[in-house]
Image (cartoon, rainbow, N blue to C red):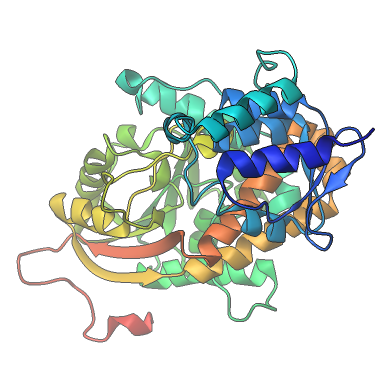
Length: 431
């Protein structure tokens, strides 16, 4: 008799103490749960072994990336319904051990282990990266490795997801119906105006990606730009774009760590979606390095994802799934921590714009691009890597929309003296 789905649903509800909000389809073809809800497809019982071996987010991620778990129906709805069982509850090994003190929960766990089959589970999917030990976190070598894991997936793959703009950060939307390309152009232009770029100025673009900001600033504002990245693939792509635009006399793309840039001073610095990689142990050093590279009166635009503050945690937080599969060694801090460290480095923070809702719109467009070109994305990378990006971007969209995380543009100035910022009295018009 085919009954794995009902058994799985019953045991999961006993284990977690709540009703499952999604339908279950098991490896034997059986189904159980709300008939109109999205369906969580458990393709193989080894998915259960992964979950029991690593309770919570990492176990779920391994099962998803391996193809042992899937969703039939609206992925966003399924993730939203399940968020209270995963991200909001924080089901890790410690909380599971506490729950197992209850005899009924222990019995459910034993039954689930029998249903899962023989342990241990298979090895993690090959897309999972090796963790960096805390002792060596955010050295130049480990940062190069982390950046390569994320960005050297292939320029053709990123072109499918990002579209012609090749900008991998939050766009700036006029309306939800705007095109992704227009919204990314508007974001680059907003940053250029906040930095008050003028012909002949020198701009340092830290974490320049595929060169979009450097090209926009040089072409539209006549500035000379140095863009630095740790990704060889990004640099090669950016240099080709610069040449095609006829901007080789104004734009230089380097494979270089920001800590090794020594040809300041610059008139302005943009750091767009890069500071998340810096880490708590290096953030003050990062801010001090950028401060030293600016001339007096120069401006920094720091565009960075932030998490919501929690009273029982320190300033930074690592996400298990993202650390293992997406951004190794990345850390998110509340925006207040970022502002404090920038000011400790000597900056005067002059403006902060929160654009959280804009990232939800951006991520949904990227997911749509990936799904539209799914077969090609799998060919360019691997089934597991494509599944990583789909889950990461869809879950991130919901996190921005539900205010679990945010993104902020912080404009800071290296003031020329104690009393002068060089800013207009009504600077927020941005030109």
